Length: 174
Image (cartoon, rainbow, N blue to C red; front, side):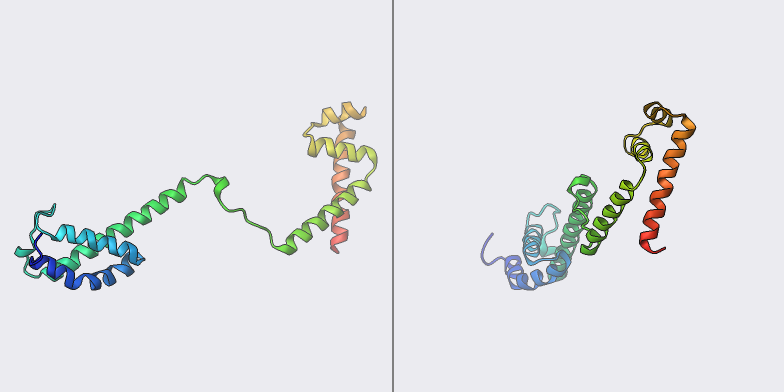
């Protein structure tokens, strides 16, 4: 391209304002610079779309239109890529939600109260509850282990749950 080419002179005269025009659309000046450079490639003779600036009635308006369209394309592409990146992110990459500092204290207090309530249960009820709720045993397995009937095993588990609920509720002041 010759230095006296009117399209080059037009582009250079408006380059800074074109960058300023594209910056709010694309979000930063670096991307705006890239958009303006791409716009010049499309504006210069021999551009891929075959429109020579010499045949355009308003070449400055045409240049701004090229910049605007390219800037919108860049913005749409970036939004699509961001959306796809977020959709395909594994769950384990998501930031962990941290509990509030006071929630940790409340959880520890509740755990302490639960341990105290469990310790206050009679041995057979504590074993039956642990086997049922922690180990996942059915009532027949609990009955066999404790040497009692299934009905008694059920009564032991149910009694332990009721006693724990009452103990925790009483400490909450309810």
